Amino acid sequence: MRVLGAPDLRTTLDVGDVDALVERLRPPAARADPFVVVVPAAAAATAARTVSLGRAGAPGAVGVVHASTLPPLALDVVGDLLAGMQDELSAPELLVVTEAVERSVVAGAALSTVTRLAEPTPSMAQHLRSWWPTSRFVVTTHPTPQIAVVVQGEPRGLRLPDTGADLDVWCTAGDEPTRAVAADVVARLGEREPVEVERPDASRVRWATSRCTELVAVPHDLSLVVRTALDAAVECRSCGAPVAWDACRFCHARRPDAIDRIDALTAGDRLDAIDLTDQTLDSTDDRAAAGLPAGAA
Image 1 (cartoon, helix red, strand yellow):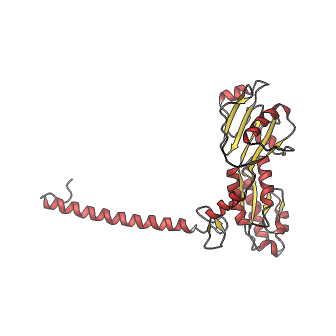
Image 2: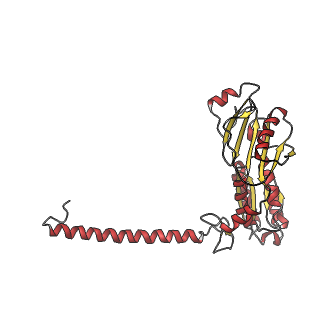
Image 3: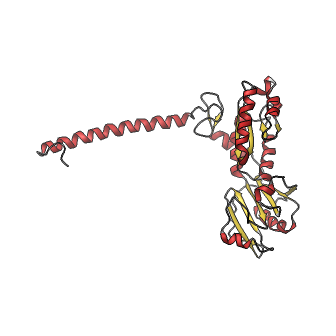
């Protein structure tokens, strides 16, 4: 798990290593500001327990877990980019930016088989096609989960977003059969040469095969993504953190405009009740004027 926050905390730890987190939180400066832990969604429960125990061992520490749905390579790349922003942004700001950056990436892989792929879920036809040794697939998880079958070198039905921005691309090395397919996808994403990196250890589990080439594309200039995300956030009335959700992730206070919406809805309900009462009285008077019993329809 990657820890974002004060300089004493900036590190990568095993997701269940409570002692290491407590040791990092021991200096008072490390507890002066909140911290964010970024982990794969599958490890979120373990990370939440680690953070809870870490906070118990370091009174005053405040931290939250961000459960990322990004596949391994994308999570590594985005994590490195976020780590480079820590001198300019606070941990609460980084949490808002993390979700915004994740929404802006294109992430997926070229695979030789989808037989054991859990997410996205392959169709029966795609399962059957996986039995052919020459089969190839393009799978994306972000921004849209999809599986496209490669036919005559063409990923049929593959939908890639038109971001309107230059994209930096990373892809993994080591699997030649799927590399050509990934290169075709990279060419569709822009003109920049991809950065080739080693495949993360978690990739084989995520894609349920070692016969894959993983790729991720991130906007070259993230400043617009960062600025847009932070401008849309609202300052928490309780702790001052930027809030992009209905409640603050750090102190759990309701977002100010969410409270205003609730108050407006409550007031609207009261007005509706008053209007309904007026209508009931009017209809009763009308029935009486017509000589009908008060309860008659």
